[in-house]
Length: 435
Image 1: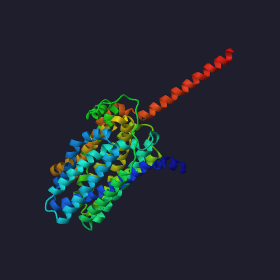
Image 2: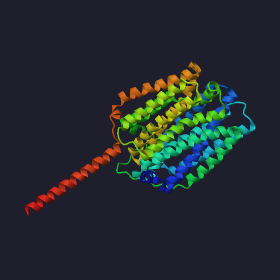
Image 3: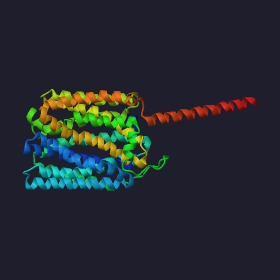
Image 4: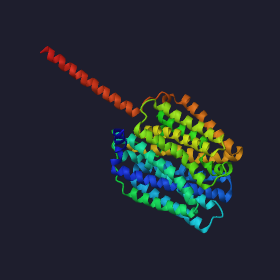
């Protein structure tokens, strides 16, 4: 076990990756704390399920407009500087929420305006953060870096909502002040990063903002993987409804809400830790589909219960299933993309992720308003299972995928090298025998 631990955590020896990891961890912690405060504050103020959906829409609207240009920026400019600027902008957003809460809110619209600015920061941050990891570690350590980065991310997602719920007992201003301080630290760490761009033997790619979309569209496996996440989480994302679920179904307060929001991250983090030591090497496609199916089934389980403990278990399982899918998709996208267009391809991936999260929150709010809270959750879980089955039929290349393409290519290269060595030895033996 000590050998496995050394091999899996050796990626932390890379100074720049460690700095990035800490910056991302505490930045995510701040955002998660802030999310609990915003959701609870808006629901207390308006009591509207539709307004909970608008929280997601306010962040998604600028995101969908800006994320493709943001991917082009990640390919043309220093990704470190982009990440730094985004942390600074998120710091400004937290400070604005702090000011609004301090003077007293009478309407949710100022909060939506700040979240729109936050969505713009997220649009530029996601492609740069996804693309920069390949610039921080050697390719041989990339799989480990993905697992460790996902683990730390979900540690923050675990702790953030719980801390947000606890600190909210002292008021929303306390949560926003702590979030602002943490985002300031993240900005400093991002500024201290040093990155190196990788070279590629591939010809220079087009500088078009749509190059990433064309690249993904030309690769069925990649297209299937990221579109699966879009439609599965779009219908199955019940996180936006958790403030109402905690208040109206479980009759609990903000601390319970923090625990509920933490549960998916607990499941994700546990799976990420396992993947850091035991990465998925075979039957990659079926593992991905299985993870999404678990996500959908657990969502149905949540919609059928009014028990706090059962809801926690269901949410934990949604996180576990989602982590398997995220892990496979991230490795597939990043290792199969040349560095010169990795930002734009990451932007396309971010469009799908953002649509599934923020637009999914809006869809959940609309569905809950139309069908009721618990029926909307069940319908979303059923839709996720239907999408999984359709994608298995529509993208058979994923269903049949056994190993990651870059692993298969490396194995083929080694086999050819061994074959050439064997042929050389045979020729040498023949020459010796003829002498």
